[in-house]
Image (cartoon, rainbow, N blue to C red; front, side, top):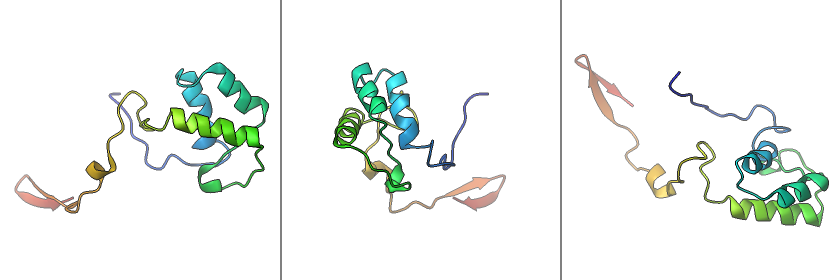
Length: 107
């Protein structure tokens, strides 16, 4: 296998996106252990777009904001690569053509 690709990887808001992000950045050594422990000890829980409402304490909100601030420039889909500016991802001419075996294809 040379690689893999994930479409929309969200399958369960209890585990995916924010609930998985904090342990992931901790395991990549991107946040310090004491910050991760503060998050865990206070039973913090955040979901994408508040899909599952949760009453977080002030300590949770503060810890999560610090984690977000420390990891703001990460490429979620490849933590080893840089984040590309939005301007590169938004092209007015997003449709193109290619010829394959004499047949024109649009993408």
